[in-house]
Each structure stands twice: as C-alpha cells, then as structure tokens.
Length: 107
Image (spheres, rainbow, N blue to C red):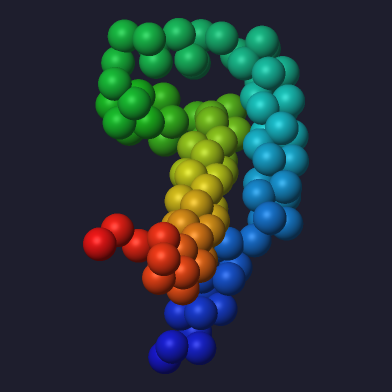
C-alpha cells in the first residue's frame, strides 16, 4: 500500500505535471475565449447566479458551450493540488535537513 501512495505522491509532485497543467490551462483559456466571444448570453448570468446554480442550469443544458469552463475549474484544482504537494514535499525535505544539524536547533 505504501508503494501506491508513494507513486501517487510522486505523480502529483512532478514539475513536468506542473508544466503540462499550465499548458493545458493555456489551451483551455484560448478555446474559452473564442467560445465566450460567440456565446456571451450563456455566461452573463454567471454574474448574478452562484456557480453551482449556474452550473445546474446553463452548464447542464448547454454542455458543448460550457464544457471548457468546467475543464478549466478541474485543471485549476489539479494545479492547486500539484502546488500543495510540491510545496509540502519541499518543506518536509527542508525540515529533515534542518533537523540533521543539532547546533541549529534551539535549546
């Protein structure tokens, strides 16, 4: 079980994954720009409604037009998880390195 968790952790702690996610976000935003320009009426209610209410009405009834938005939310959440795991991994390694120097530890 530990090996599976280690592989999952290593997957989310990858700089390559970060670059891939940023590239996919850029492509998704590019697609979203053109969809938004041609279908503004579907996205204007997002200003008045909450995200969940808008997703339950416009998002579900027009999946081809709004799918780029949901992909963007997924990619941003993935980038957030990737950033959290990378930061946590680096912090753990720094704490381990810091604890190996007993003279630096406060008395």
